[in-house]
Length: 311
Image (cartoon, rainbow, N blue to C red; front, top):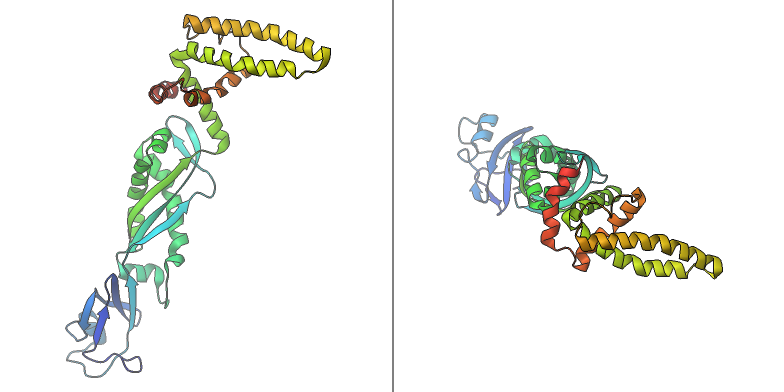
């Protein structure tokens, strides 16, 4: 090149993981892949046609040449700034959060030049990052809906969710000349308030036919807490309150323990308990697995029962 003019017979070098395109007066002409190319009318057929060269040209010419990187652009982040609402066949409307990463590459440089980069001298990955993340967020709900997989199964198998999202996104990337090479989901969760409700529903499903075992555990856990509460009242009044509470609690504990020993899964422990007492009981379920009272297999077996009870 001399004075930014390209000579007839000049050599064009395109490195590995690159593509070069010639643009003449706003029109994309010839495309060159990796290697060394001698520029002649034979190697520049489209440009030759645009320039109306009916014979071998001898004079130099000018043309815009753009080099595009075709290597994978890895570890591109995506995430939901705010919870998004999806329709789930088990829970109805659910708000969830998710984040992960993806990788892509330029697959059609002519299309990408025409639709995205245009005449800019430099167009970096950062310039297209916001657009691509927007595409991911826009297609999350559609990906979940098209997969037909319940939220709980998606959360347990994030690879399935990633595949559904990748299938939904691939055509959208292709529209702007890009190829989606990989998609990962690193986390899929509910907002904290909904997660607490889900935990309680899971606890109800976990009880099932093990109510007797659960009530025995509840009785053992309640005794030391009652002792602490009764001893902290202070003075005669506190002792009297503790004694009165102890009588009432003792009756409840006796009923619970009896129900547990008899293996009754449904009746005395739950019948007659106030809603707040039931909720307090459910909060203890999270400790069952930690304490070893419920195994992982028992936890999993209750999942199907839980889903049937949800409205």
